[in-house]
Amino acid sequence: MAQATIRPARRGRALNPQARPGNWLTILVYVILTAWAMLALFPIYWMFKNSFEPAMAFTVFPPNLLPFNPSLDNYKLLLSRTPMARWGFNTTLVSVTRTLGAIFFGALAGYAFAKLKFLGREVIFWALMSTLMIPSFITIIPQYQVVRALGWIDSYAALIVPGLTGGVWAMFLMRQFVKTLPTELIEAARIDGASEFGIFVRIILPLMKPGLAVLGIFTFMGNWNNFLWPLLVTSSINMRVLSVGMALIRGGIGEANILVMGQVMAGSTLVAIPMIVVFLVFQRYFLQGITIGAIKG
Image 1 (cartoon, helix red, strand yellow):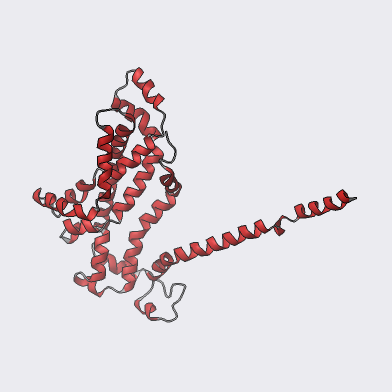
Image 2 (tube, rainbow, N blue to C red; image 1 turned 60 degrees about the vertical axis):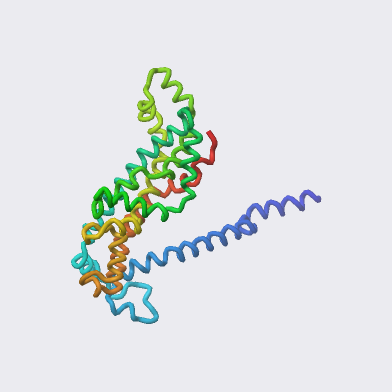
């Protein structure tokens, strides 16, 4: 009789899984995460909305959540008064070139420090790693002096060459990823008579695609948003990049000092769109960027 009274109670709880506290906790977590996501995305939406509104919409209180009398006038005025197209070309050229260079040279250095054995490998590696403790702002003045001595000021060489290799960070990231790859594949290729560069191109590079994607994403984003170095090494208006150009727009540049906030928002939207697209397309690699090197090879 005792068992007969207990079993229906258990069966009743099984038929009503929504009554369990765990489900309510899950719903609460989803509600909190949704509210947090909406709060984080609201500034992007506000920038996008304001880019389509006239100047008088910024004086309305309380502000409208939906676009008021939307139009493309802000974009037309911005493109007619500033060389946004040239700034976009400069930024794309610098970002893509530096990203490709970081991927190639970072992968080479990472493979060498992870799988090749040579005299002083650990000493050289940790000597390079120690440079990460030096603030990047300290090295800007020597780099600027070198670029000026070479006559590269206000040129694409000044914008591209100093960061073409990706730096120590790219080497370290690729080394941590290559260490997770099996060494037996490399030894088998050596037995078959493949050269070291052939092993790197035919075996290592195809296996490094996830790591290369992570390095490419972060390098591209860093160069797209880079501000200080392009500001120092460029002087003419046509050699500026988008980040520097947007700062000049906000501060006043020629006729751009009459730009209203809507056109500033339009420029910010144009600058942000490529980063949003990159994130949406390659978002699954962002998590891999956190876990690279967590598995010891």
